[in-house]
Image (tube, rainbow, N blue to C red; front, top):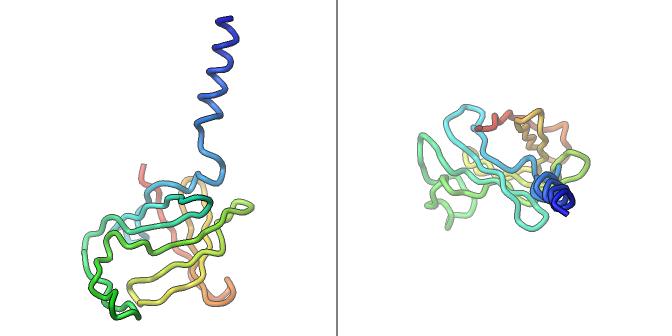
Length: 135
């Protein structure tokens, strides 16, 4: 009986509480310039990202919506609605507070780090940035 409960406990702790493949992106990352940190998290079946720390706190002064120009960039949910499919998080959007523009976006893990590609229309017309995971 002890042997059976040990085996059941082993499988529950090993497989029951481990992250699924899609959830490996969840965590914190340095911005490409390492002047801030972002957090990737999940709500229901979609993935989001927010800026949670930065060296130069400022307001979202370039936002096209004038009513949002006084909000702080720290705490801003700037990535949203990413779906996981075939090791890529796609169909999301990314807002760039440096320009006030929103782009289509996809992201993927390379090792433990994150690559994010924002683009207009098709992925060929865009830019990819590297985000190092904070351990």
